[in-house]
Image (cartoon, rainbow, N blue to C red):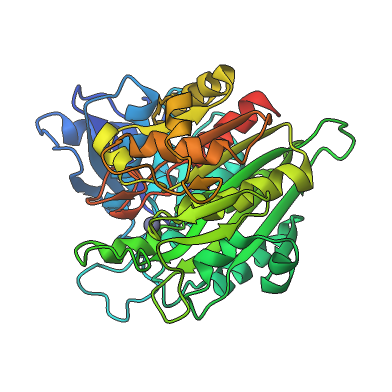
Length: 473
Ligand SMILES: [Zn+2]
């Protein structure tokens, strides 16, 4: 979807005017003749929210409902507007009476919603085709949508990857999608099986060994501030393109959603993409571990002991706790290869986080309270909410193994599955300032919302972009 601001309507397209519940409109009396025509028409009529009425051949009036009083409210308004008009023809959307910040939020929401997973549809039914491929918001304010568009398009890019089925998005195909980002000036480094074996990434290789498709570690480097002496920020993402659970197999019900177990990797790619598109003066490295967790005669068994790249040995007591295994190697790689000033990992890591927090807040764990605070604030700003969760020596102890340095799940009955998973990751981080985001409860929506259709939400792209722009840029 192309979104633009214009100072005058395109005479070839009809205009759309919004009418709020209190009878105020998105235009002022200066916008004659539209204002007169719409006011006369709306005087004795109530227009329900989302209803469109033809006022004349070239003017359409749309019910906008109640005026929001928050940025989030305006975004949702924009999302609803998009859903109403994008299966119609293009409009000039007249927004002269709008406050600048409210309008920016409305346009942001409209653009955020303007995405649908249509890649595998061959018929228009049951969804009507999208006819409005361009939205022009007409205002006399000076506004530039491009910086927001860079983030929103990255969200769409991530949603596209997350919704792709696992027979199409295998680890090698994911690598290709990431390699395409080099067109934006991002350096893409790929470690395939040979290099992974050489560098001893036994934890990642162990998870991948049951699949036909080999695992990869990919580093995406955006060095927008080449003159800076400061170490870069590293983002680390879990990219399990399909998680069957391995021999600790998952129940059949809902297993199809395990194609989305690569959300963390998609989010990391999207954030680096957004920074590069915006040409931000920041140095950000994205590291993603890509792997498919399958059952086969070669697959990892419960009880296997693997040696991670850090040298620590891990007893794999549950092959479905694979996210932490691949992150162990990815975090170690990010830490030793790039010596970052800070690392943030993002992962659909534990089912237990849904028990703890439901679908409302994702979890943040950190060895630095300031990072937790900054991330929570950034999340609030973009409505991707985080709740702080604990690291504690007792969670750490619970990961000690009888036969290796550590085991990949705590003893039965210990509980706190998200906290013990975070404690496991902590052992691979050392002294590097680090935060871990567990998003397994918010990575997909089971119904449409104002700004995102049902399916992968790409939770974290907006949050991490906001955080980087606030704290680094
Ligand atoms: Zn799993």
